[in-house]
Length: 93
Image 1 (cartoon, rainbow, N blue to C red):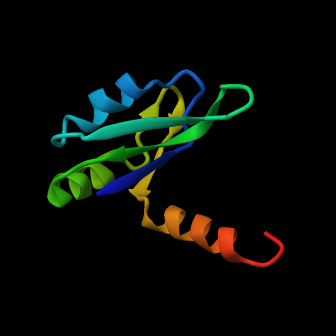
Image 2: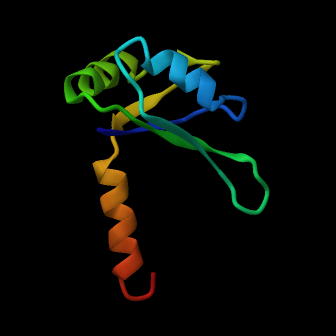
């Protein structure tokens, strides 16, 4: 399951997220998204977990958790991917 994690501070790394999510189960991939021009973090990322039950437990357990002074937003990434696909095919997007 692909998981969105938002409201991240600029110092959060892939390894930081791996340590958080591995408390709930196996993690396949992690990506903290960065600006393509500056390389600076954009404040969100994605975590892929192979086991749906572990992913749901991680979402429930980590949503709203304080991470370096910010409450993280954690949810299934389907909504984000869907919105990006809609934007890509919408006229004037």
